Length: 64
Ligand SMILES: [Zn+2]
Image 1: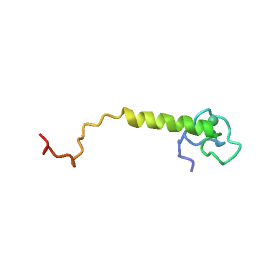
Image 2: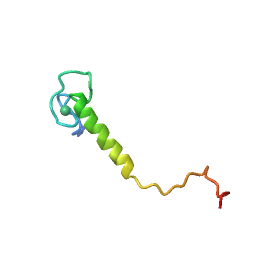
Image 3: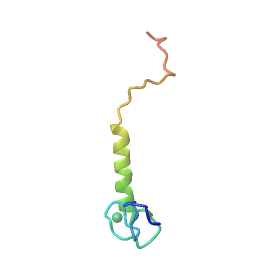
């Protein structure tokens, strides 16, 4: 029974950045360190973009 409709499954492992077929496992799931850095950069930018409404609870108002 093949009821799975998972499009994320790809026949070959491809780089998540440039979609090239991986030739080595060294930088999995990326084809090279360059693509790994690209992904890391995106991830960091994304984390920076998240608005932080929460204030650090450790800060006290004693100085005011
Ligand atoms: Zn790549």
